[in-house]
Image (cartoon, rainbow, N blue to C red; front, side):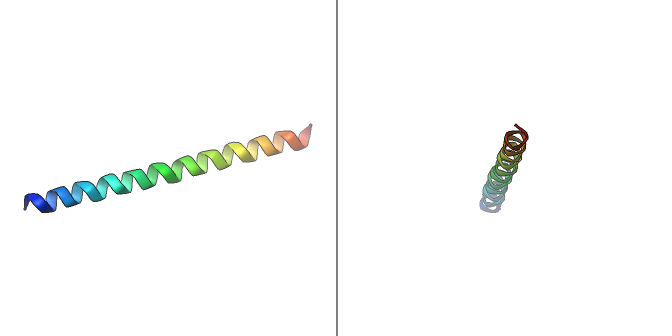
Length: 42
């Protein structure tokens, strides 16, 4: 039973890591889009 709990915890940690990575990618692409838009306006 304890082994299943550890596996669940590991799966949750991996999911959290992937979610954070995806959020960072979206954040970076949003910044890049904003920079490109302001550069084109100049």
